[in-house]
Image (tube, rainbow, N blue to C red; front, side):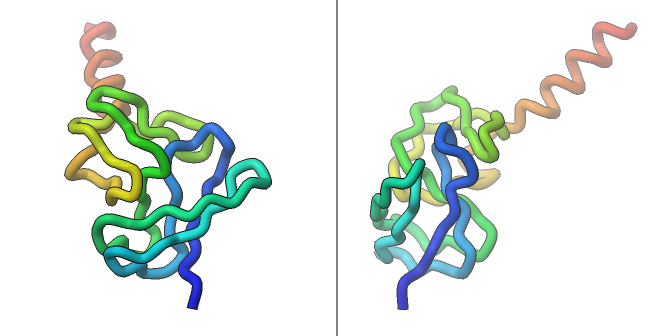
Length: 102
């Protein structure tokens, strides 16, 4: 059975799995009409993301064509992308806005 993942926008650097994917599984993704297969490095639970390219530490993590965070450590292609390796930019923006209002 082929496991699948969705890339929302061509500029995304993560894909979202639509079912649980076991470590070592090659997952086909479609990016702008081109199919690429990526071997996942860890088990990826339903609804979670994996990197479709290498994401250096401090680089933007992009889903839906929007920045959803910054890589808190280097993330290899096929690696699970979640709170353990992504830092929220939203919370930083909120803190900054509150400081500016004082």
